[in-house]
Image (cartoon, rainbow, N blue to C red; front, side):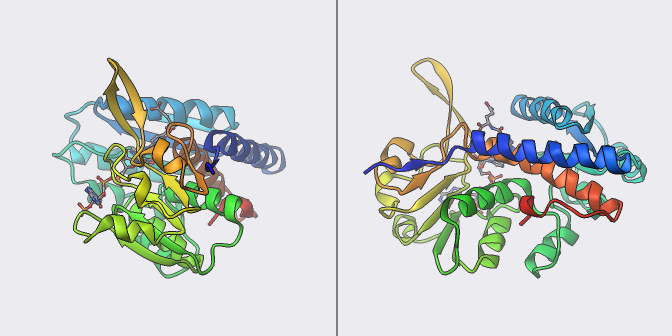
Length: 296
Ligand SMILES: NC(=O)C1=CN([C@@H]2O[C@H](COP(=O)(O)OP(=O)(O)OC[C@H]3O[C@@H](n4cnc5c(N)ncnc54)[C@H](OP(=O)(O)O)[C@@H]3O)[C@@H](O)[C@H]2O)C=CC1
Ligand SMILES: Nc1nc(=O)c2c([nH]1)NC[C@@H]1CN(c3ccc(C(=O)N[C@@H](CCC(=O)O)C(=O)O)cc3)C=[N+]21
């Protein structure tokens, strides 16, 4: 039996459609246009692709997009001054600072300078704390996208064994929090985990967020499991650059019950959730009802 393919690209298009409807209602009803500011420091080519995609999709959803591209040698003080301006700008409802930042800038200081109400990435300590304590927060886009796909595919998640491989602040840890809030039994695995294949084989839900091309083999996957592949890895194959995930897709697909492809899985959902969070932030800023279906 081969796995159902969870079509993140199609799902993301649906989510963006719902966001666009919400934006149109907000503009017509209250005269408010949600605005997203994206800040990119330096020239990282992958980041440039994402920033371009985000800008185009933001405008397509009827929102305002403000892009700030800063030189590699921008000082932390200049970046903090820009954040302060964006915090104070009523046309900006969401602020995203593309990571990683250059090494001479302290990323935590920059992130925590963002007004939590505008922190559409959900990376500030305030939003992290709200999520961890089960309070209303801005939820990080990648884990939120994974959760929406899991709910859509599985319905009820309660009681399932979930294994998240990777414990980063931007993916692994918030993913674990969201699955815990869904009453999964959560294991958070990482580079020091003993016998990772055995740990993975216990998973009804396996989320891979490692950054190592095709590390998760087919025989690490429990038959029938739902596999969410967050990894975006560029590899050279047959003289061409290709995008592969953290999961050996061909092998896992033969065992899993369902699996997300790379590309066309988690990536497009991340951007769709960023737009959803921006709409949510705009609604909250004006005390208006927010789009419940697009939240955690
Ligand atoms: N689709 C999307 O929208 C997004 C995709 N990504 C992609 O997801 C992947 C992960 O990103 P991110 O979370 O930022 O990565 P990080 O590099 O911040 O974290 C990687 C995690 O994987 C763990 N790890 C590394 N090697 C191993 C190993 N051999 N066995 C088990 N665990 C291991 C690390 O463990 P330890 O903590 O012990 O070092 C760490 O916790 C990347 O491919 C990235 O490009 C990221 C964000 C969004
Ligand atoms: N502050 C911050 N927030 C982020 O959310 C953030 C970040 N920094 N830094 C980098 C990572 C990575 N990330 C992706 C978003 C979309 C795709 C995406 O759309 N991927 C497409 C393919 C795109 C391609 O061809 O490269 C897909 O998987 O189908 C991928 C990766 C967000 N990140």
